Image (cartoon, rainbow, N blue to C red; front, side, top):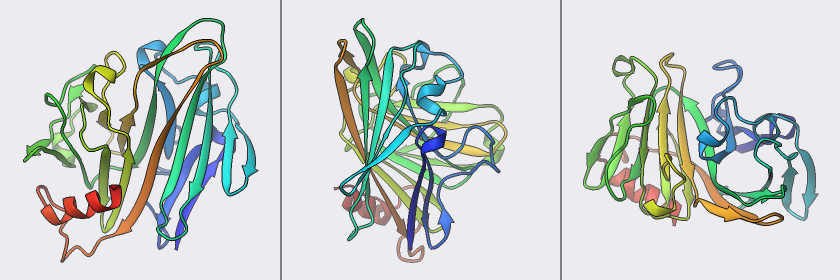
Length: 266
């Protein structure tokens, strides 16, 4: 009863991750351009806004390699980078493994980090283990989580979101999770040190827009130098579970919720 769908015509974007017919990701009816889960190169200062279409929204070619779906995008002239995405499924657990490959298709050394941006409906609870330091502010107002026993919890409160808000942080343990109703999304990845983050970015980022339409649950990999013809691959595992909210309440500081996420993310 799980569905995982990718739209190759739209930058290889993940458009559905559903359980029992409920999609944890937003669709175009919420925000026509910014929906689902996309992938960018980091830092954003390299390209500003909007994202290079060759990476974010232009068609990718698609092929099946055994049990893996492989999508390949065109080169982004502004960056000299191209992106390939590979998707595979563990049929026993329903976990989806997503591998992103950043390739330097230009003639100069490029430095970049991989960046996954997953948009969920405004609301719910987003949380992750804090690494070194505390939440940092960027260009937008600071989104302020509650940090309890080393875990940062962002419980969405529309009244507190009076402008675009974002946080940047170092994570720990290599995961970020989001609860919407009784659906639990867990994204797990290799943990990185603060020194490995792209300039002005963070291993973990959460964004809430002023229009109260969506929240971005974001994770980044290591900032690396790629010579011409070189590539770097980064892997994120996606899991979706249904919660028994009486046994495992979705609230700030829930130890049962943390225990479940850590088990899923192992």
